[in-house]
Image 1 (cartoon, helix red, strand yellow):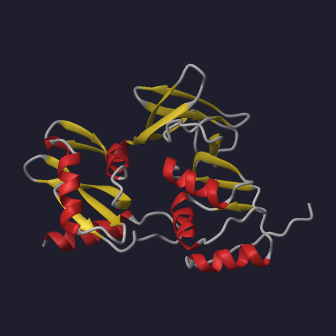
Image 2 (cartoon, rainbow, N blue to C red; image 1 turned 135 degrees about the vertical axis):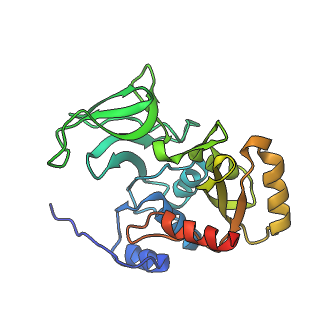
Image 3 (tube, one colour; image 1 turned 60 degrees about the horizontal axis):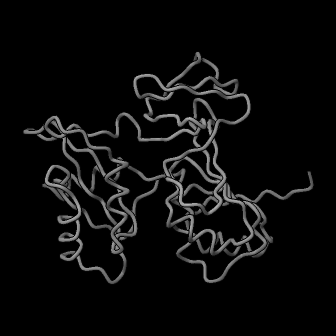
Length: 257
């Protein structure tokens, strides 16, 4: 097709910027965590970029605004997918204030339905060895227009003494605080309540830990309060650029001992 494909195996985001400028990149694919890293080192808009393709995680409203600023000519497309099923739904961002949990409509040839809160997928693009309809036990709902709303992975729900908490909901709520740059709600075992959770956060440079703790305390209801708050300079990432929850669990366990 006459295109040049550029791949990079480092998480050093300044290298990504250098490559984009050196090769006049017009389209880019990075998961939202990597886009967040990239946005911190960009100093000026890159108008040559015409498409930003991202997925695997939700694209927050604030990150969309940042991307639109640095890539003013780009169409921003986010997809919902999985290793077993490949691409499932997609959404083209147009700047309207729609819910970031809206993952858009199915790709051509793919159909979805929701049963007992779980998303089921019929797709000709699944890996061999599974039968469809197939569910990843992700939870969600469909709108009248056929858009998929993603409400979280089944294992990312916390049963805190009979009170159900969504990790996705807690993370979005934490990120509403201007002093919090990134946040992960990490499920924990609890001898008394069965389950609890820890807030793993990256704050802005000027934020004090005392002020952030107080803000979280006032933001969340009594039942939503975390068992622990872990302050990090950056969230740990695995080799795919996604948040490393196993590493976070180790950090939290170490902080609690």
